[in-house]
Length: 221
Length: 321
Image (cartoon, rainbow over all chains, first blue to last red; front, side, top):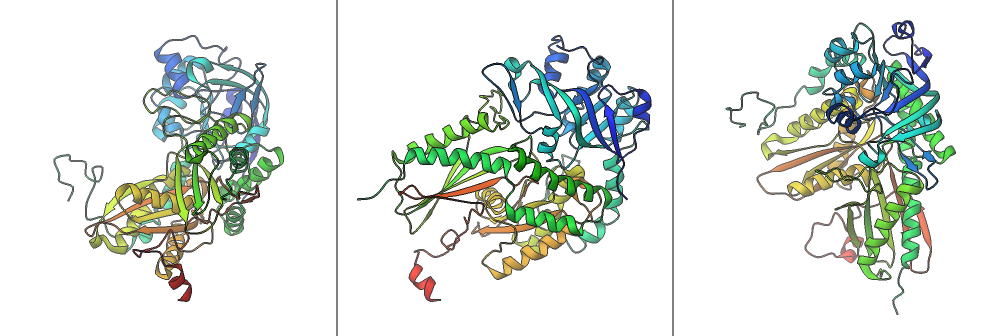
């Protein structure tokens, strides 16, 4: 079965979000901004003023550092854009979503269904995953314009807050829904049925490691 | 009189290599991924593979990087025994650092390299120990091979000290553990070339696995027929998990599995696993003193000389066998 393809605004209506199903393919239109640990720490821990009107300008937070440069004349060149793994940002996301009204969190690998149920669903937000995760050139084609880059002096190019105008930017995959269900966990569960067969005949290592026993008073032999 | 390989040629070639690595998917990997896409029947993983194939085309057409995470650029340099560099090896290292910085701006690449503690970013992928430059030598030739690899990914790599009593079943277990751990949600950016390092000291074990994934091509086989058979078996095993691209249900996790070995401590059997991602960025050029440059994508690193196990290198005897 071919996945469904959907055009979505980066300031989506609650109805448009409710319409999304796990595994749908999404293309985005409108303004999107990049924010990852650098931006979160600066905005939430150092209480710096966020240099955009959120969520009216954009409700789409991309976990991304683009391959881009700032030219001598102040213009920007953006080549490829690819997401970075989102699970590392769980620490900041609840506060970020409450503060900015983000409805689309876009990144690599998704979050856990517990994250979705705890703070995505109450905020009416869903998670979109990039595809591959290497479709950086395709996503780069969806960048109509780089509108601004904020905090590049303070955070460096990789952690700066890039503001991108998207024109049918994609593909992205819907990885969570308003029930808080998680696409990756659904797939994991299907794959899990086969694990015992694949591991048949293999044996645990002679020398264990911490993490393979939860009791730190245990020896690892 | 020995002719030197001109420094300006080294720097300009290195810049071209940086660009090619970031933009052009190597043909051996592309062919492997196309074969995977033909066999894939999982809805979602099949969609992902087709999107990747489109992406490689888009990158080449637009001359833009395949992936926004352009990895951490590094260099492997191989010298024929008679090669001489204008200005010597220090000049060579300077040229490679300049090429890395220049290409980061011109392609552009993502300036990924930062200080581990202070997170200082020079915005050019150059810093303490970056880019890494590693060397190999061959008994003959007045050429140098410049190989750049931009390996991405914080995931997909692991090391473990196994022991002789763990045996092949223990090796399989750790291999599967690595694929399971980093394959879920597609953190390893599979299907990938998986490299396995067996033996060596701990650090060299990691190096062997890394080189097995990034310096060998899809379809190459270890010169030891028993290891070559393991490579086939491990490729099959990885693809039988039922996990595909992005950790979705599928049958393509491993485009190829390459194993490299080194002699280790008699009591141990250290093992490392490395995954080279969907954008397997590697590019190679051979430079001669007369200014000739030949580009390719096969590093051809693991020659009989690199895998030698005798005290002395005796090419004549080897040839007679």
